[in-house]
Image (cartoon, helix red, strand yellow):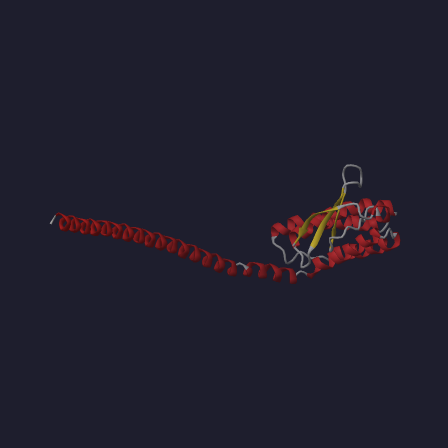
Length: 215
């Protein structure tokens, strides 16, 4: 009788333990499910946010397109840059006669540059820049090589500031040589990263660094 009673008590205790284990396991599973559900919601919010960002990015090119259309309506600015590059390359080659002709051509192009497609504020900024560029391109056409390079330094300042307003369809690299004109240094624009110094030519052809990429 005692053995039977003990056996019965043992079985009851076993059932209690199993019941407790089941409750613990059920609780753990429930908590895990809640945790996974919470994470899923967060992922859903993140995916929703990502989709919104993507949609916003898709809307942005319209502004860029408008800018490109503006550039197409002002091909004169690209012509100015083309003539500027011809002049710069002549100075790289230390070719005085070619620089003289390039200066004359740039002067003519600048004098025919119209401001009709620009806003009132842009016109106010562009007018003195164009005037300065005309002045120095004219002097380049009448000077020796040393003076041509000195005027090119001033011309470059005007052209670079013009590009900041007009924009350009091409990728340009603003380059700089710290050795020119003492501590002043000289900057120029190029269509390639490779350094070809217009202030020293073959004497110091590789003197310079790319300061920044434009457009």
